[in-house]
Image (cartoon, rainbow over all chains, first blue to last red; front, side, top):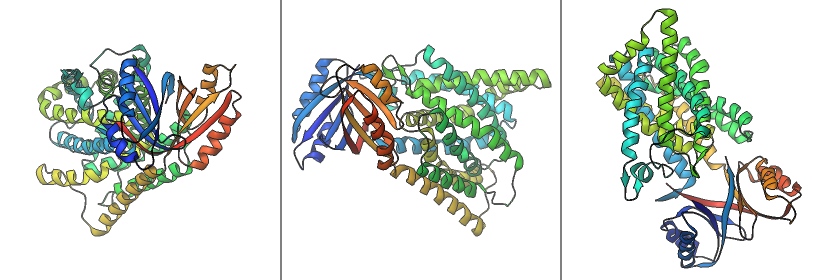
Length: 79
Length: 413
């Protein structure tokens, strides 16, 4: 199982519609709207890097997405 | 389906508490009409419960469109029923022991007081125990808001639990304060630890946790009752087995519902602290009232008084509980911190240093422009600054960081 954060910059005013589209993507486990340099953080849970490419591809095709940065998780500590 | 994360926590916990209220009503019926002895009742709950839980877990392990039924409809972390792992063993032993003692206390209480809304009100005070234990065991000291909300919930529970006939049952209160609440607090904490464990790179699932918990609870209940029988000459173990056979359908129905109540509760424990979960679960008192009326109507179990003054006190109590829960819900601040570190510093060591900061709920080392993505849970932004940012700035390896407050969040359910 590969986990990754996809950090997304959006064009103004298109976030709500984009979130609706992203919710439909199968391997997306979590979506957070954030305030800061990026507008949305998506957490993807995939079985291979190829699947991760599929998810990033689908996100990039969502209307309003202007830039994505993918951060693959190497190690994680959680409560 | 994706749902906002805080709503997911509340949806799971409130649904669980609704089922729990229903189950308490079924237990009242069994205790009043079928198995009067609380010790035999406890054993039959776990004996029949183990069979029912096994059957339900096996059914939920059946594959359906490449995933199991349990994975698709109950918990996305569930694959199939599996053997216990060595990393879980210690927590299962402790959770099983505390659940066994808790259930013995619960069965004694239910045999003393048959009315569900009173029984459930008493047990809400557990939140105080949980806050104390969490402040010691987890790296998360309760904030003023958490303490205030917990006190409101507790006072609400006390008002809602006042016997409306005006009498106070001291035995029942002692059982609640000395057995039920402390054991439930520890039980919740170990269940949460189990849910947060990772098994083969996946989060532990609620269905396996519940199955193994019932199994260990049965083992410990049997041991406790065997010791009791040996020293006092009673026959609770034999009585429990006989009662299980005679009242199988009622107990099996109750334990089947309990399975779903617990599975949802364990899942919600994976999303929020045990104290917050128990605060939400206090809504069970509200749900217990209609069930109390149903019991009084259909099963000849005494109802609480409908004296207007007493009813007002009960309504005030329930209002306080709900207010406390809303305060919990509206005061959680979440944020991501994106961190880059200087060359020449160990990632592993820095990860440990970040993890030690109060309020950090997740640290991930990642490839890409940022070395770490850190998730923060705090009650106020001020506390986030005071406790978290200052500490991150003081870590030598940290070159730069960016704080991004979470405005809304959805999670796959």
